[in-house]
Image (cartoon, rainbow, N blue to C red; front, side, top):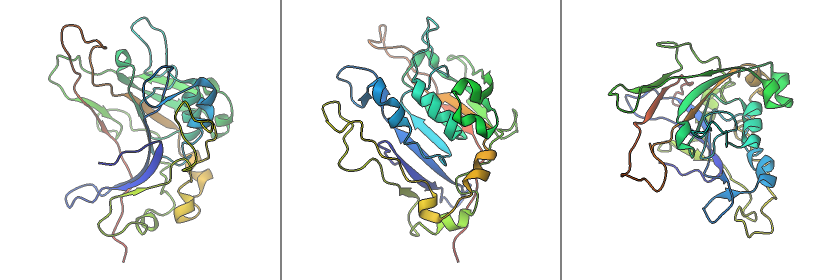
Length: 263
């Protein structure tokens, strides 16, 4: 288990009977709200904060949902972060996982317009949005999101971060290592609300800084679709009147590149 404090990691699965896949994941606990809760950020800092997501991230995990995607309250009001939505329209990862808004648990698939539209607003970048359907909470069926083409249409995204050379990325690991943590924000920068440097975010390094040129233009041209999942586990909101109730976990079946042992 690896805790990502607004940073990314290169992960390879090493189980003897496992799929031996390799991918880059970015994770952040930050949420846009005011108050005394941990990991909060102000609206004025949102664009700089989410601008740190590396453009070659395969999977993005955030506590906060993006605006207009898996973020609506029971009233229908979207409460997600607009800056995060804008950032995802540029990165276009295979999978974006969030939570925070329990009412909006579920998933959707976003078909992107041409790569050049990433510099426009998210409304122009999003060509088509398809909302998925999961079994009801009382059902004993597995909450499966299939992106492989076995049970649903295959995700139109093979712009993997290690697309140029997966084996070269593997060479960065020690034999016993399965997660390579990449630097987060600079040590002198704090994300706490009382820090005078809270807005001085610096870009996170791309994978190319570790393994050379990853042919970023080619990767972007292959990123045509993203699946966004709100994986909130709580079925009712605080203060949980009548006792806590939980949703079953959501399982995502996703194709990723594989690695081999370096010679």
